Image (cartoon, rainbow, N blue to C red; front, side):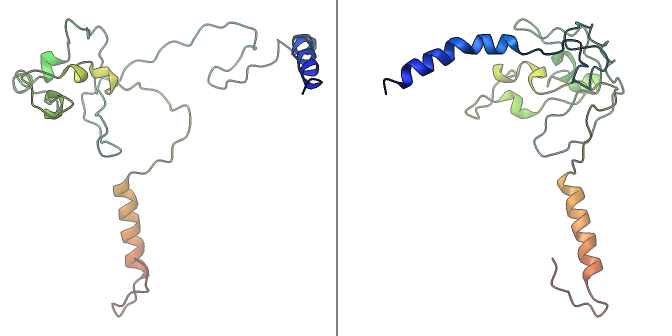
Length: 172
């Protein structure tokens, strides 16, 4: 055990010297393809932010219990402990008047399922779950298929697998 301790100490002392000796080229191309151009050492400005979609069209949800996305810009909306601009349209009291979808009744429940008169504090900050969409090309490919599409494909495959006499081939 005692001979190992000096060897470890020597290794710990030598590591910084070994790391400093490696010659990394600081002018190598940056590995991040989302911000092409430049080098690792170069500090480049971030690209400008894209505009929010402002179509006011409800989007289809990709999975059950997915929070709906925000189909309009929220630039300038104040959402803090003193006020919430979203509730001026989406609250129970205002949604019918402005023809906006009312927030879910679950937003008026506490964590124990007790119904409250006002929006629950844990649901007050809308952008924790709901986000506006940007009008941009996706950074990466996406092959996600929702369950309805998968079930339709399986049902179509099952129909094509059945025989003309009405008997099944055994596939679901």
